[in-house]
Amino acid sequence: MRQPALWRAHQKLCKIFGDIVHLSVFGQHLVVLGSQRVIFDILEKQSAGTSDRQQHPLIELSGQGFNFAFFPYDQWWRRHRRIFSQCIPTIVPNEQLLVQQQYATLFLKKLLHNPADFCDHIRYVFSATIVKIVYGVEVADDNDPNVDLMVRLLEGLQAFNSPRILVQYFPILQHVPLWVPILGSQLRMLAGWRAAADEVKQEHGRQNTSVLARILRGLEEETDVNMAEEHLIAKNTCVTAFEGASDTTFSTTQAFFLAMSLNSDVQKRAQAELDVVIGPHRLPDQADRASLPYVSAVLKESLRWHNVAPFGVPHCNAEDIEACMHDPEVYPEPDRFLPDRFMRDGKLNPDVRDPEDFVFGYGRRKCPGKAFAEDAMFAIIAMTLHVFDITPPLDETGKPIVITPSVEGSFMTYLEDCRCSIKPRSAQAEALILGAAVESSDGLAERKRRKTQDRNAFMNPPNELDRGRGSRRLALRRDLGGGGESASNVSFRFAREGGWLGVRARKGLTAGPWALDFDADEGGSPEDTTGKRW
Ligand code: HEM
Image (cartoon, rainbow, N blue to C red; front, side, top):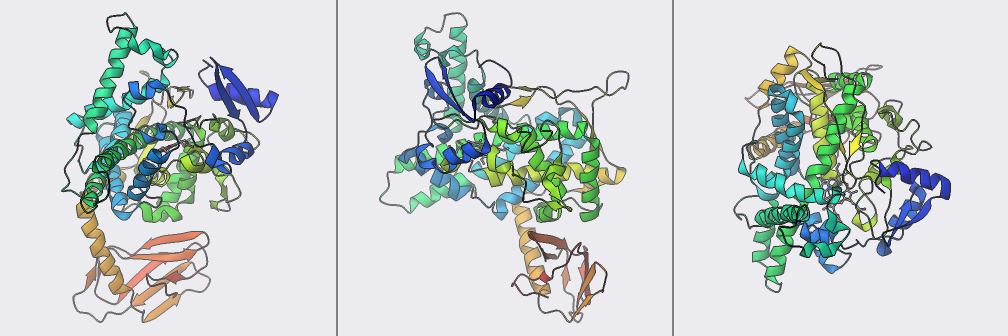
């Protein structure tokens, strides 16, 4: 039970004894589920009976009593989860995507100015994004007092990672006086984390467009609800969202950086894809996701290769997700970082088991922040690869240092050493980062609204549609007949199997005739926003 990569020991046990292994640890019963099939049979198909959580005094003691990830499977949990799903839904809404894009751009600038502190920047970008969405508060930078509070709150989660905290084995020790050596200091540390959690739960303003403000405003119209309870649920849900979003994405993105520095061939392939699809004049965004299958495979592989929560959050039965993510029968050479395992003929291969079906947990407790996490990490991964090269760190003599991946932690795992060198890919890439505006999400929303207007103006029936035979270039022309109209950035969708290829016209189009040229790498026909095929 004290091995650093516990899941490897579990994997061995399952090899010897079968897919379901029962262990008795200090009188606690633990069931290890060692294959994808039994995990699905037990935690998905029988989810109603396997969605409870074990209760432990450490949850309250470390200040985590608000976090509904630890709640038992009951009505109180259901009410929290419902509010969460309304605010951070399974398809990330536009305004949340815009905030993610805003902070991802800021991340690139921080990386450019101070690449050595990239881990701090990763921590900042995900935490600041969720704080902005949930509370409407802009976390300026590392000197912002909110950062200190956030760090203290997240430290509370580390209580579950530390085998040294003795009250988790002997809850009676919580009553020991604070002057008792070692134990006293552990209890003081727990009290500090509780205080941070109480501070974060203080009510914030209702004037902004944040999730919390919207929930609280919605309550003003309700008459027959228990207001105190509803307010508590709103505040608990927001802090849970912050905690759920911070360390998980942080640790996975750290792994992405290390993987890139160790696998230059993978990095070059992803960059080649970005060069073709995006080109040197702009940064990628969510609309490009369907056209970047290899970058998407890099994200999947980062989630699989280094699973931040190898045991998930144990259901009342324990499970072992990591062992499945490293099962050589499902993922050959499981310890290697090989995004190609998800590809076939230049597209994502639907026949390969998607790690996203596992690393986010199961059944009714499945991670409700999955879509949010994937979008936020995709933005960071695609934008970073587009403009930076990530290579191994160098020693004082300029020789590359070889880093062997190893992890620490058990409930949440982190790479012990993920040093790497980060440099802009070219002078042009550097200029692109410097020139990228970190527009506030409100400004971005306004720009998006104008863009939609432009696009709608453009989407009237075209006068002419040319499709070069045998060529992959497609040109659409529409003569607007002069007259001062202009569009800065026209979006267009191009149908193709398995999704949509986002296509964007050249910037600075002026009044007709407009020409929209784009490369379509396969057959299909373009469709406008009204669903009409051209
Ligand atoms: C790499 C990113 C992430 C990973 C790998 C991850 C993984 C997980 C896992 C394994 C669980 C336990 C599921 C189960 O019990 O079966 C979970 C639960 C949860 N996650 Fe995530 N998560 C990620 C990101 C996020 C984000 C971005 C948010 C919030 C925006 C979030 C919010 C939550 C919440 C609230 C729960 C508790 C669900 C419940 O008990 O009902 N997670 N996550």
